[in-house]
Amino acid sequence: MGLKKRGQGLRSWIRVDSSGNSQIIEVDKFTMMRRCDLPARDLRLLDPLFVYPSTILGREKAIVVNLEQIRCIITADEVLLLNSLDNYVLQYVVELQRRLTTAAVGEVWQSEGPELNRRRNYLPFEFRALEVALEAACTFLDSQAAELEIEAYPLLDELTSKISTLNLERVRRLKSRLVALTRRVQKVRDEIEQLMDDDGDMAEMYLTEKKSRMESPFHEQGSMGFRSNDGGVSASAPVSPVSSPPDSRRLDKCLSIARSRHESMRSSESGTESIEELEMLLEAYFVVIDSTLNKLTSLKEYIDDTEDFINIQLDNVRNQLIQFELILTTATFVVAIFGVVAGIFGMNFAIPLFDNPGAFKWVLMITAVCGITIFCAFVWFFKYRRLMPL
Image (tube, rainbow, N blue to C red; front, side, top):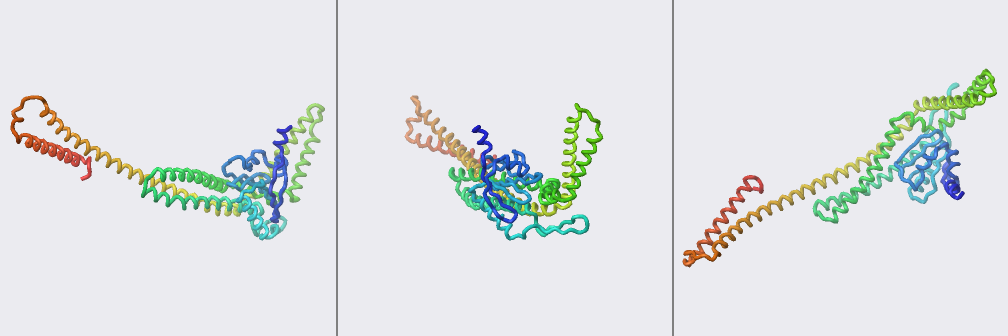
């Protein structure tokens, strides 16, 4: 019983209506699912305890928005957010209220002839709320990218002039942050691009239009037509006390599916003709998020160039060490020749050369000249084979 209460506990939501008025409401998960006609997996996207990639989902009666800190449900006449003390969530609510209160109240519809030819003087409520969410997410990501740029470029310049363990560690942490931020920006960009590429998804997000269509007399007549067809079929069907109830339930289910498909097709057909408003809105923020992604891409390329420059410097130092080791090995070889000569003359043998007082000086001079000649020959050979700079 305790688990059931915990799973169905009330949660605090911020509700903002189309007039810009906000209030705190206490609603449990299942009531919210029925209120917005959403499955449980969509509500999970709004839970701040879980980390989900950025997503914009168009449903029958709501738009589920998960963009960075902005996680909300947008319907045709209200916005619902989980009550949070996060600064960006509060800024979103304040900005949404400001825009809704300054905008004209309601929408202007013009009817020409028997058909409802509708013209909007401004965006419907759901698109204004979506616009504020997109603006908040894009501004947040762009500010993080700007902060990363301010921190990165001086650090990279310092690293090129002074390669140290501390600077390398700072650049490593910076690159990790850059990769994570780039992944988030790329996900928002891909989500907007995916919406722009699918006209059906964009048409599904016209909640005000769908709500008006559902409340129109034409929709009621269509529903009654389906019911009359349902009744006619049932009346003409053969009466059987055993088979009629299952057949009737199956027929009701089929007619319900047919009605929903019919309404969905009508909504998609009419919505596809007027998706330019949403497409222009998405294009504007696609350009903004694409600009942020270009900044991060340029920063990543600068980091890669710095890494290449450091690798070239390290290769140069390694080559200098190898050359020094080569010279040192050659000098050691020459000194070893002196050691061989000293070892020969240090043997306990009677040699007539020992009786000559100037013999030691001549042996030393000849050995030195031979050693220098051998050393110079090696150096010339190394330069000839381009093992050392000329």
